Length: 94
Image (cartoon, rainbow, N blue to C red; front, side, top):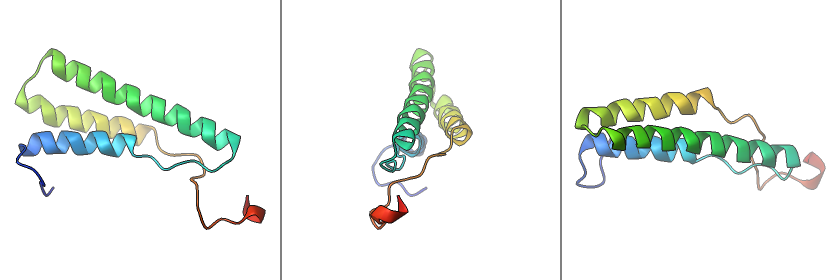
């Protein structure tokens, strides 16, 4: 991973995992998709909060990579299952 800051690589890796977990596509205008989006974002945010709380409770530099790995695994267990918003979709396509 290319670092854009003077932060240690482990910190950059952890921050990237947090961004990846929370950066989900907007849902379509369908009410079910909007609900699924909210539920997914809540679930992923909870995973990030738990991981960072554990890290803050027992900080150690080697735990940064473990925390990033946990966040990525949790993210993979909760994939996007709704239809993302597409600006090129016509009214007829839904």
